[in-house]
Length: 140
Image 1 (cartoon, rainbow, N blue to C red):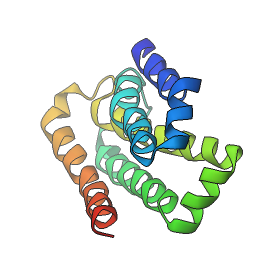
Image 2: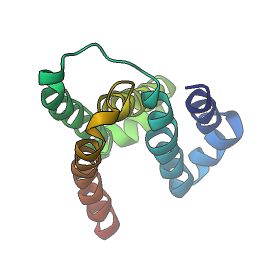
Image 3: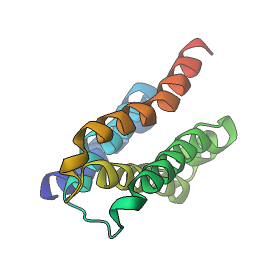
């Protein structure tokens, strides 16, 4: 969890944040570091209290929450508002990181090792909406 916290702090550190304000590519890299580096490292160490039978429900809920956060913040009006407002930008980062930590904790956190194969499928399913959004943004 320490490495995850360090990755999150580095992703929002002043030099990285300044670069993210100057460049869309740097901005997206900042988000990717929060979601694909910091979140898994934090999620691996975060135990969530739920029963074995509720695992699939938690997976579905975490995929929905992370997808909703990703798509909502990339809607043009909200994206532009977050770029102009520090509090909204912080909320954006927190929602990306929080929803991704939830997902990673559900699929790979303590006590989830026995479901490793299903966790891989869950992560794959969670990446599909992000891939679709990335493709749409590339072609726009």
